[in-house]
Image (cartoon, rainbow, N blue to C red; front, side):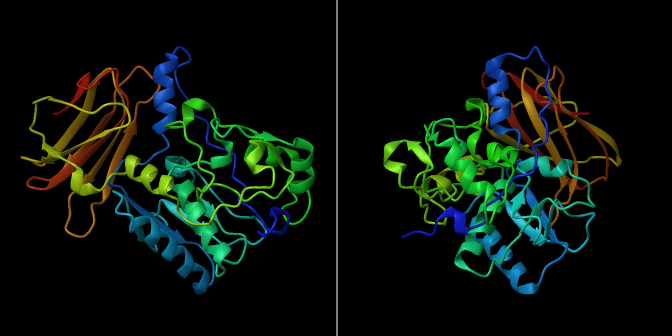
Length: 344
């Protein structure tokens, strides 16, 4: 029989970063934005560092990053030592539980703070599951049991009793935010609930009223499910499938990407001077500019116009003869070709 959740500590998420937008934004547009704007621009090299922790624990986290990478997704992961280079900062505070900020929310967290923490031993099978789970949050995925499509009706009193007790000792507010509260439907792509997901908790008997098949609990296998793999590949397709378009000064290019898709461009600077990259049209986008290099493509700048009546714009001093990669993640577009990009 599976170990009850009362015997295990579970991931307890920090308060999410508020998503700001124009209050008059159309509901359909907002739905597309919220679904995708925590996801990374595909092709991002996510740089992580350890701020503490014994080597044995670090090895487990490295292995978990490799597990995600080996799916063939369009993201890469690099361990760095310098905090100024880092995006993800990983701690091992045993008094703080295990958690991670979600997706690009990480970029809003000050460099002197961790963005992921592990509060228990990772050298067990459950510890490895925890590492995979927290990295799933870092990639932009939420708790699966909070999906609005799960259809879960909780025995609320039993849930409170279970999780206010040992070993989690959560407050009712923590229980609500990590279990009871459902994610808004416009934050979820698709309509499938995956009880086998790495982002699903294990629940013991007596906590779920409906669906009836889960009255005796949920016992996910503790590794990536088929839907986890297909889902992460849909957001981050392998880079071999990406078509890169060349940009020329003063020549606009239509962005042929629908909501949730991405367009990639390359620009070779003809002169050493400051250039402006700007999108136009009716799209909501995230734009990132990196310098093309042999080993790594250093991040230079990014902009996000989602939820407001403006367009992304980045100004950078560039060097003659060097190539630069411009990635545009389209969060919302009324239709393909409803906007474009120009460099000047």
